[in-house]
Image (cartoon, rainbow, N blue to C red):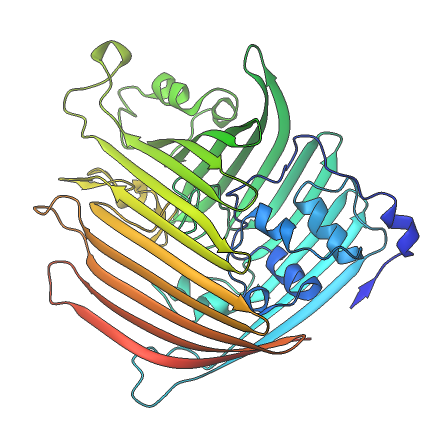
Length: 460
């Protein structure tokens, strides 16, 4: 359902972009629960959009139809490419999915799932979005940790500043296999976020973004926050600098949102809070855009790093860093290839994202699911995906292989394989034949699963 003003009224207010706020950045993938994927399936129905294949912001913009519509303008506004929302617009979409499994299939899940997306334009600068779904409860690790409302947010634009508050998952840059610092693998949490342009002396104008969240973990309050600075250098290069924390206590919490997190940790660590209360991480990301379609990228995460004693470092601090190197290539207009290599350190107390011997709640995880990249500690992973779309047909292959970084430390290794053949039956429906196989092991005997299943989805 869609109600909007006349085409002439809101066509005139679509503009080329909103300066520096929410700018369409290559490699920025919306969270998997973001309604953007539903909007795109409605305005540009193809097998890949109906199956909600992950797309970065620049890829989303390229597949938008040229014909203006109220929903297209909502997408453009969310991506920072329109100055205002269409007036008096409400939209509701429901999707039902059904799954069928052969008797011998080892990849069995729930036989049905649903999505419902509600969108309300409150003013031309205020947007309310709610998603109801049980999709994340179908399968995966700790599926019961997910709620049936994975996304409910209010987004406001006040001049050059964009505010967002509500409940949902977040994802920042990184690769298609996952964000290194902030990722959407975990369940939704309440948060508040702000974005605005900032000019730094001698360094020019950057995009700044920061969020803050508080939630219960193991029955105790836990705080999570992150901030990042991004800047494009010409048409080819993007530099992203980010830091994040997860805290078990937050003395004078307002201060933590003003000064750098690393400095806050140093200032407020004392005899009562020597360590194990503030888990600090930082990230440096570089994206090189060869052209409008092809890009190469590098993301380097620092969980712990030996620093000189003069800077408060310790010779006994284990190094814990992770690196992601990847490429997104389009050999043809309808073929996409993604290749990524991820490496994460392992230590005697676990490694990257782990608790470092402190309380389990200190680990960079929530409800036993990673808040960062799903690679885990002490592993090297190769991720590859190729997909080709030909009219109503979609063909896709996913492959990931893992091995230990240090053979003498724990770390699951093995492979995961996925095959997809999708067919768009109508403008609002798609059928997919899926094959999944995996063989993973750590210290015990390998766990092997394989099986086919049929997926059918229809939107109303």
